[in-house]
Image (tube, rainbow, N blue to C red; front, side):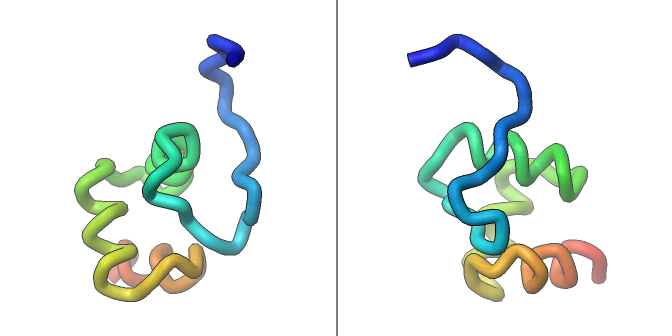
Length: 58
């Protein structure tokens, strides 16, 4: 496994996998939110990234 901490692309750019630490870090950077905010948004609206983005931008 690589120790590369650079932003990587998610396996599915339309969905958020909250069980993948790399995806959590990348989505949090993209949405400018905390891990808790991201997970709460996913719990509220599901894993589609555009739904999560809209929820976080309320």
